[in-house]
Length: 275
Image (cartoon, rainbow, N blue to C red):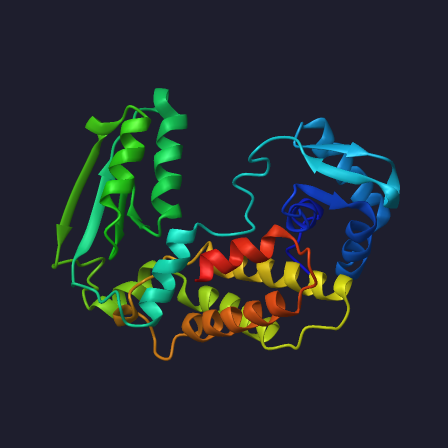
């Protein structure tokens, strides 16, 4: 199973009480294609970083979260607000108002780190680069961008505007602009992989079922995190993202229902995100 790190497996198996059973960790990791050595090295790194403590050794060990939110920011579960917006789009509850939102900034080389952070925030929110320092999106992300610029002490460097009249290199038709500015075939391909995995029946047995759940979570994140969540009006129809998200929601419900108690907190977190 590609795209799954050992660190991701550890965090995926954290129980509600913050513990990870060593035996289960080694079993699930092996089913995903990882060696015992990979697991040992990962556990050692997580303990060194202060994210986990460990009692015992090897398969008899028990890992415990060392703080309230270790692993925060791990690409295992996309932001709940982001996921809910996607499903609202799928239900036709977020129609596009026809506005393009543009953001431009000019930050000197002396503030390069802040400039890079602002750029990463824009692309992380789904905005596409048009040319140096200019980004555009059909989604109203202005409040998030302005807040991030303020945190970086760059509010004066940011320019925001909205328009219905956007042309890039002679392209002005909205769907043609979307095809030009975002890698839609690549995004669709990731959703195709997610749909194929979601439609597979979960294998029997707790370790195999957990390995399948980890793979599903990884595929969901791999498809969702790079997705700019363009409005349906700008996407080819039928859009693979809509189909894949529906299949993932159904698959996750089946997995959660079949998971023996106590199950990893991953099931609760995904249940909340997909609610």
